[in-house]
Image 1 (cartoon, rainbow, N blue to C red):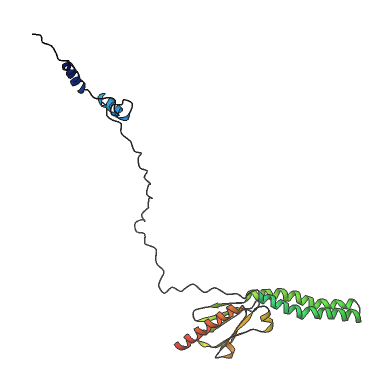
Image 2 (cartoon, helix red, strand yellow):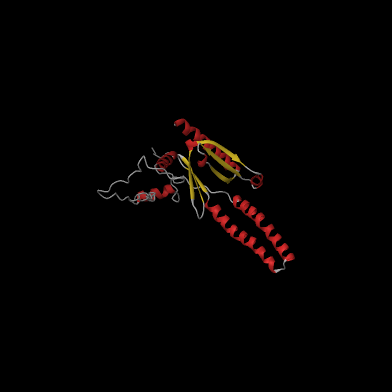
Length: 237
């Protein structure tokens, strides 16, 4: 009796051996991909590559020097320390322009009149007397500027301080509690230059004072402030 092999036996053995092998056609067995690199690295006994992160940048903290031993802390100002004095307030420049205009009106026409009459009646030489009014104009022009710069007033806590004068310096203190009337006046010439004056009336006529040549807004502010302070000081007496 002949023994033989069935046609499918060899095929079965061959297929069984073939199934024990891994398929290298897929993406995992691709030797060119990242998975293939990892497989080759493990086969060679190495470790897979790792991603390294850069070190963090640290900012150095400022070095503070401790105070020396035995040093006392800075002293705080006392509670009863006097406040800083109020600044001096000056007159506007329109006051100087107004005064120089009035000086010119008082000296230039007389100079022209003297020069014309003297030159016509007595001769040209006598016309030089017209230089006298012009000399007064020149001196007054400079003195008015110095007098304008010397004027000032300061609003203090309890009184109003006025200062003026060049050769003879004069300062007047008007207490707020002694004020009875504060008025604002402005003549036609002052209104032309946009100025006003503040007149202070007290119980004694000798202590009256005047702040001339203020701008209308400043004159009204000073009047209202002095009136309010005068009422407050009078009520406290």
